[in-house]
Length: 275
Image 1: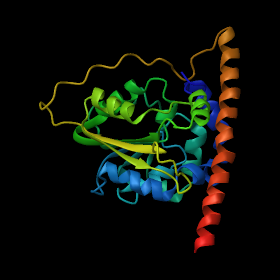
Image 2: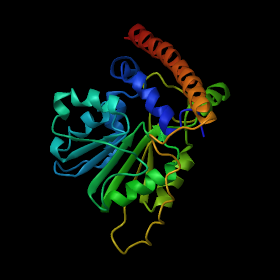
Image 3: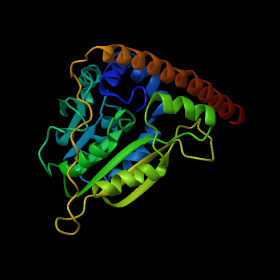
C-alpha cells in the first residue's frame, strides 16, 4: 500500500491539513465547477433523497449536495474529527448529521440510503473493495453510488510521486470496483481543474453505478474483515514505520501543492492575456 493509504497515517495527515484545507488546498484540486459536474452522476433529483457523504471532510462536497437535497436528509461521515469540526462551523451544513466513522465499516444498517457520495476519499482506503461493498450494502435497491477520485497520472515522474503518496486507481479499476461490488449501469465521467491539460489520461473521474432492484441480480459477496482499524494499538517497530510513512507521505503530498499552484497561475495568466 501507499505511504498514506493507511488509516493512522491519513488521520494525522488530515489533522495537519485541516488547518489549511479549505483556503489553500481545496481551491487547487477540487473546485466548485468540478463538484457540480461530478455530482451530476449522483442523480440528486429529489430534495428528500436520503444521502450519505462518505469522507465528507470539511463539507465542501456536502455543500454541493445540499444545493439539491434537503440538508436534514444528508449524513456526513469522516474518520477525521478535525475535518468534521470545520464542517460543523458551516451554517449551511448545520442540519446535516455528522458521524465519525470508517468508510470500510459503515455504522449503518442495510438499505438505509438512496444516494451514496464519496469524493476525494478513495485515495486513502486501505481496502477499496470493502469500502465499495459497504456502499452497496447501505444503499436501497435502485439507489445510486458516486465515487469521485484521482486517476493514475500518465507522466512517469508524477506517477512515481503519486504512487508513493496514496492510491490513484486507473479508469479500469474504478469500473472493476463498482462492478465487483454488484453495481449496474456503471459510468465514468472525467473531472479536472482548469489548469489540467494532459490529453493522455483524465485528472480524475466521477464513477457512478446503480444498485439493482431486489431479486434482479445475484447478491453481492460478503466483504472480508477490514485490513486496518483506526486506533488499533501500535507495537514495537510499527510505531517507527507509521511515523516514517506519515513523514514521507506528507512530503510527497506537499510536493503536489506548489506544482498545482504554478499550473493554476499559468492558466490564469493565459486567460487574462487572451481576454
